[in-house]
Length: 126
Image (cartoon, rainbow, N blue to C red):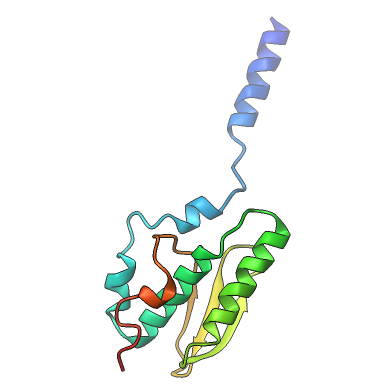
């Protein structure tokens, strides 16, 4: 009886452990405004979505080296945008903080919707 109770307690404890694989939760866009619709709100929003799409496209895996390569790729792409002043990669998660010339700051997570950054709606309109 004690063994059965101990086994049940261990099973319940393990079932309550969270998954540390954040990427699927962050890149899933269910419930959010679609990326192309958000990009139509303005030029800075379009640039943010393009960067988020490139961030998602660069995903290779969950190891630290893979994350660094993914973040570096997205940061290099972000620096090609005309309105980006500063880009900071979050070392604890899959996030980039973008600062625009206007002073607006936003944070983007990987958007993996099958499109590349250059395919973002409203990106090249000024």
